[in-house]
Image (cartoon, rainbow, N blue to C red; front, side, top):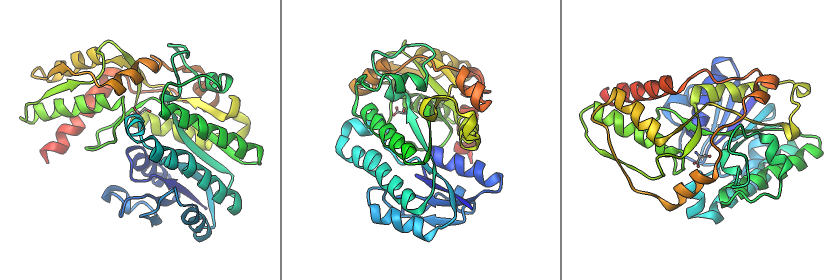
Length: 328
Ligand code: SER
């Protein structure tokens, strides 16, 4: 039996594959890239590269080739800013891609699928504090205020249909994911990754000024990638009877902070860190729409998940990991 990970080469995919491999899972890695990143190549049993979720027959053939898949992760989706720049393509990947995956799973009789939803699903009417995935299921008509959020909603609808057809879909609402990879896509919470990399560059002697694209007082929920991976695996592993939240959706909380707080903490380690404010309209709009904090009680109750990496530790971990990478 194996786990099939679509979008394997992304920041979340790579970490998830690392964690799955270390507990002995056999992994089929699917990605649109021509090859997998070196760090995961030796961890996977089969690499299905150059594969596009937008093509149903490609997905169908993958499931025909790999007969013993027990769980599917569909991580293939553009981030918020990419979606705003090219909503049509984003829709094809996010919604049509998921539809293709679900059809191929249905034919192959594979039931369990996990989807990474986003804080981008919450619009202006959502609570600011302790947001739950349940709120999204109870307010299906709220306007998330972006194509990004609307597309995630479209996916949740598909998952619900899949559930009604006997499937076992589960989804996690992800905050901004913080990690120490050197590259990432164009998103909103990614401003924090950019700031931390700029600071690490300063540490290794390359002085730059960080351009902050959002109002520095806006608070956003974030999560360290190790916490995220733990939470995601808990969602995958949970017995169906444990999952008491509607539609099996869980927000995974980490820590919340403003850009101002981040810069202050960065300066504690990197006193030469400089920034100025250069608002990006899309990013600032999204940052203001999205909630400040996510609820901790449901994932703790049903998944036994709580975040373990606090704000100061998170900043330190990312900075040190970048510095070590930049110095080798
Ligand atoms: N990091 C994501 C984005 O900003 C949040 O879902 O696009």
